[in-house]
Amino acid sequence: MKNLHSRSGLPLGIQKLSEIDLAGEAGENTALAKIFQTREIRQTLSSILPDVLNVLAKNSKIGKFIMKMAGKILTRLLSRPEDVFEENELAFLFEDEQFIRDIGEPLPDIINGFFDIIATLTKTIEGMPAEEKKDVFGDVISKIATGQTGEIITRVCLIINDIHKNDPEFFAKTLAPGFQKWIESIDFAELKEMAENSAADVHAFVIMANNVMWQYPTKVVLLLSLLPTLVNMLSDSLDISVGYLNDLPPDLLTDVVLSLLNEIDTQPITGLINELAEVVRKIHTGSALLGEPGMPQLPNVLSKKIEEFYDRADPVTLWKAKIALAETKATFDVCVAEAENTRPNFKHLSMIKRPEISNIRIKALNQKLAAWDAVDDDDLAKSMAQHLAAYDIQELAEVVNNTLRIINRLGDENPDILSGLAAQFADAVDDYELSEAAKKILDTGKVIQPLARSVVPGLVTWICSVIQPADDAYEDDAAQARETLASLFVKKEA
Image 1 (tube, rainbow, N blue to C red):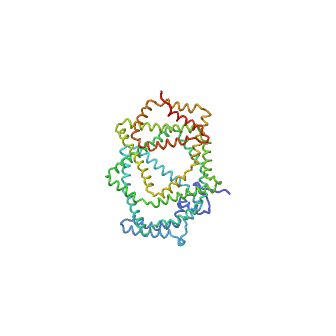
Image 2: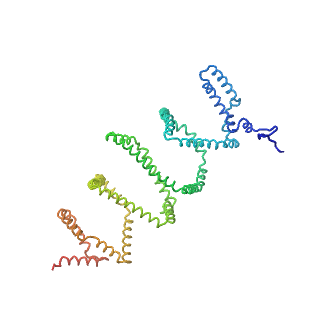
Image 3: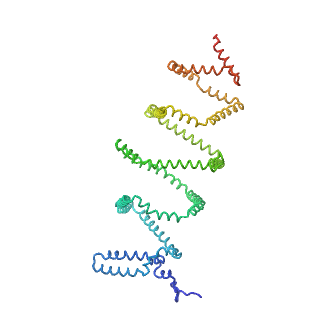
């Protein structure tokens, strides 16, 4: 059967209307009408409308009487007998799919209209002269910046302080049930799946954003140029703030710093370090338990990841980057040295003050050694024995052995390379300067002779005992050393 409609679009004849249709007859915004029909909104309106009407009546007695009667009528019209059951009608309303569609329909228009208003407003202000722009913004800002937010923050702090003085754990206890329900209601598996499923979309979004941005390279460059500006602004702000801090007298500034340090509670810091240390220990123990004997699991996983990195990395580019970074660091060091050396005051102070830094480190080391020296002989012997025994001497010996084997293999494969390196070094060293320096150093022999006499006799005796005849693989070399030494003493100068 074909439905007939009037020119206005409304159907002709008797039609059965749904609740939403009935709400629609009352106004164009069906969702808004249904919201005002809920118990919560009606009770809210019935409680505030009499006060609103009373304010509108001002000081007129007749007006107040009329508004009071109107308020009673509105309160009676807004009430329902079933309201005594206090059902959650507003929450139930949002379970209606049709309502969600109805309320969602006008939202874009409202939001877009709001942005249209802002866009039109800014466009109008943009066309104003600079003085009028200042007047508009100055008037708005001066009326908004009345200090009310500061007063609100202060009063909120006073309220919270009073609550905490009475009950230090008030908010924790009050929020605990709701927080527990919040945690229980979140499906972390769905959250994880959402994050995993969003990876491709985020990747696509980044590609899309870059594709769009790089269609306008100039804008990208201007965007990047904001970074130096932000750094300059931050540096200038810190300069001003630290400048005011430096205006404090030394004793007052130090007192402030010491007060801050004294207020630091070391107990939670120590507890944090202890817990982190326990985490590291458990990871190490768990790695050993999960892996094969002698092969912990964590190093295996890290090894695989490192191998995957090197499989995908470009070695040429990687080493070019490493060399570039090293050259950049060297250039920076050279620039600092040149800037310092070309300024006599910096150069002079550097020569004088730099040793003081070394002195501080030497003093700290000496204090550590003095603390060990103050320990009694028994404790010192036990501690040092445990300390030295903790070193892996076998591994250290293997390092020496491997180094020697590499040198020997290199000498066997290419005998000229070692001699060539030595020759290049010998040719590069100025033998005259070396000779003069050796003479000047050896001229101090008389000064250090007491020290030398305490060492050299024992050293010579030890060397003589080493080259004594013995039945071992090095006897031929020892015999040649004895002959050379004997010939040195019996040989007469021509």
